[in-house]
Length: 169
Image (cartoon, rainbow, N blue to C red; front, side):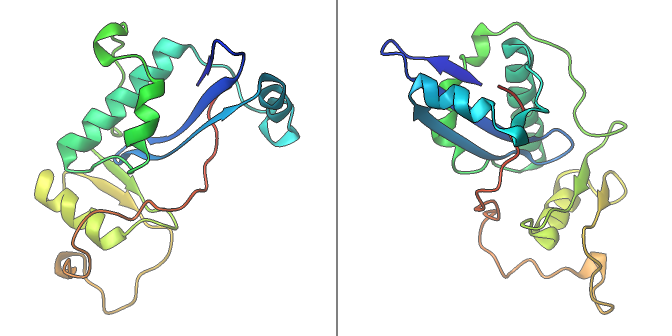
């Protein structure tokens, strides 16, 4: 998502959004000169990106954010700044978008996710059997899903990595 400033610079934001469970997992926001912005878009690693309608993109972001908050998950701390590139939620045209997968949350464990904490939060918010999950790595043989120790972290704060896949120009 990008916005051209009066001086010609481009303010852009990249939102890593999990529409199945966790909402806004990370963001990057930056201000660059216009020519630098278009040089970035010409990067071969970004050529696969397709433009997305601004209203649709904002519906995805806001909808995933609300879905995750209903499950007890907060957006990545960087969202507190990146949200200002978005239009106010009340000014965008609402689109009906399905969140979760097949009517319930689906947690797909990533390399920086605290699986135990997220699993326990889903147990609290929707209950056993009311969500699905896919683990990235196998657990130790002595771990049991219903016996996760949730005391090792005081808050949900496992999204501190800056690895982002941009979703649009």
